[in-house]
Length: 289
Ligand code: GLU
Image (cartoon, rainbow, N blue to C red):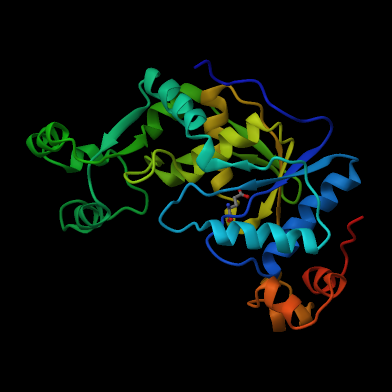
C-alpha cells in the first residue's frame, strides 16, 4: 500500500479529541474536549472525534458508547463516521513497512520483566530509556525465539532515525518553538508484542490521514510530540501545530472542578447536573456553540 495515503478530510483548522475507551470520561476529559471544540470553532473549523481503541486488553465497546453519549449530551458535535483505530491496523502496518524498508526497525523479543532485569543488572547501567535492547539478549537466545515464532515488539533505531531526519522543530501554541528531542524515549516501541501498533505510531498516522492541523491535548502528553515529530519526518507526513493545555487539576482556582475532578461525567449527569453546569465545572471560560 502506498504511504502516506491521502487525507480523508480537512478544510481550515481541524482539531480532534481522541479518548481511549478504557473507562468513563471525567471532567479533565470534558475540559480537553471543550478545548478542542473551542479552538476549532474560533477558527471556523472542525473538531473530529477519534476512538483510540488499539489496546484490546483495556478498551471496552461499552465505554466507547457511554463516552460518545456523554460528549453529545455535553453539546459537542463532530462529523460521522468517527475513526476507530482498531479498524485501521492496515494504515499502521503500511507505516511500519515503510520504516522497516528504511532499516529503522528491529525486533525486540524481551518481555517487560526481562527488560527491567537486564537494564537494572549491575553490569548493564540502568537507563531510563532503553537503547539497543536486541543486544541485551544473547544472540543464540534471540535466534531461538525467532525460530519458535515468539512474540516480539518492533522498536525504532533511534540514533539512526534521528540521523536520517536531521534536526527537527515543532511549534506549541502555549510554549513556542520546540527542538524535537525524541532521544528521551530511546529505541521506542512502535508495535507492541500484543498489539501490532502503538500509541505513538497510530496517533501520528491518524492525525496526518485525518488532516488534523492543530493537535490539542493535555500537557501530560507534551513529550510524546518529540516522537511524533520524528515519525512525521521519517514518513513524509505533514506537521500540525500543537497546543498542549494545562490540566484541570493544576488550576487551584477552579474549586468546583477540584471537588468533582474524579467524578465521571455520567455520574454528574445522573446526579442532576445540567450539561451547562458540567461545562462550567470543566472550564468556566470556555463557551461552545
Ligand atoms: N488517547 C489518548 C488519551 O486518551 C489521547 C491521545 C492524544 O490526544 O494524542 O489519553
